[in-house]
Amino acid sequence: CVIVSSFMWHIVFPSGIAACEHRHDMPPNHPITNFRALLTRRQEFVIGGYTPSDKRGRPFASLLLGEYGPEGLRYRGRVGTGFGAREFERLTGAWTGRKTSPFIGVPRAVAKDAKWLRPDLVAEVDFTEFTDDGHIRHGAYLGLRPDKEAKEVTLESPQQALPRPEKGEETVIGGVRISSAAREVFPKAGCTKGDVARHYERAGARMIEIVGHRPLSLLRCPDGIEGGCFFQKHAGKGWPNTLQRVEIEEKDGKRAEYLYATRPEALIAAAQMGTIEFHIWGARTDRLERPDRLVFDLDPDEGLGWADVQAAAQEMRDVLAELGMASTPLLTGGKGVHVCVPLRRTNGWDTVKGFAKTLAHVMADRDPDRYTATMSKAKRKGRVFIDWLRNERGATAIAPYALRARPGAPVAMPVTWDELPDLPRAGCFGIGDMAGRL
Image 1: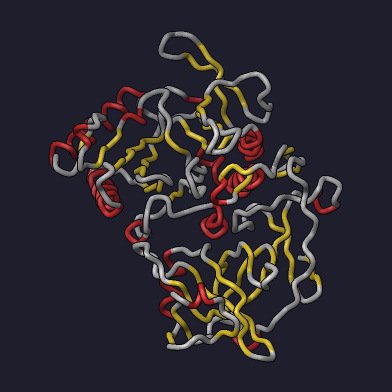
Image 2: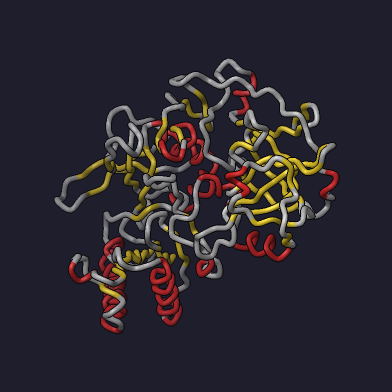
């Protein structure tokens, strides 16, 4: 840590960035670039209210925060990311409501829908800077500070921000040179190419445990998600050597070179090439004909709600458990859930695919009003499609912790079965939630 005046700045390593913002690494000639890290601020604030949420399972959208000064509790902004199910429960169980605002200087637009609380609780928040109005910019909740009295949280003077690189400048993230880091990839979310690379730096070690040594299919969006996106699974000229190659025989008998990753730098290097999504085989390169991962993709018809998907996932879990198979849910970042089963590498693709197909059709035959195991759009009307086709040789599924090329920059997030009923939707996690999840 580096203490600067009354602020504590900290160097943020892969687990530390908690928001996606118009912000980039230091210029290449800045000495702190050698750390390949960003600087953000971590500070305590008093919780004095919240804005309600219209999302199921989420008791509030954001916390309203302040600091004590000579005139009272001064409003300092709000924070709406970094909360897990347990934190929601902890916060709502700890606070006490009140009828009037405890703050000075709350903007009218914020106060209009706010619910007020007794200013007893202190939250620790990670953020980039204060706005010209003195409000938190790009804040993320880190946790409560029960050791700190609210009255001890006093106003602090913001320091001058460090210079930012101009648009188009290169920067180094995780040891990989990223060009045009300022280019927007998710325009409505304000996320840049540099933010994508930082996400894979942050999640890379965990991802490699799952993604490592698996043939990849990459969704590349060189001009952002509003430009043209395309899948690439074969290695081409100009691809960095940090991504490994493996030769695989395809259905037509011809052999082709596929990409795979063995270390986090490979994921960052792929982000440099415009990759947003990583899709993975169900087998690893050392034993390609022996899958070790089974995936059931529960894809709801457009007329169904999130509760239908949750119920389908839980039923799939129970059916697998009856067969002695433990499973894990993965929120896809889209509309559905993947129910994932780890396998011993004892059976070939035909056996695994045959099992997946049979189980999907048994569930559909047992409850035809709720499920279908057929891809036909007509037969999917009002039902959840149990997609078993991801379990054949050469098929892929979205990788855990991968970004999705969708508005808002959602992340495909592994969750627990205990968490699933309380989560509001399949795309409820984003870049700003990664620090807490990891």
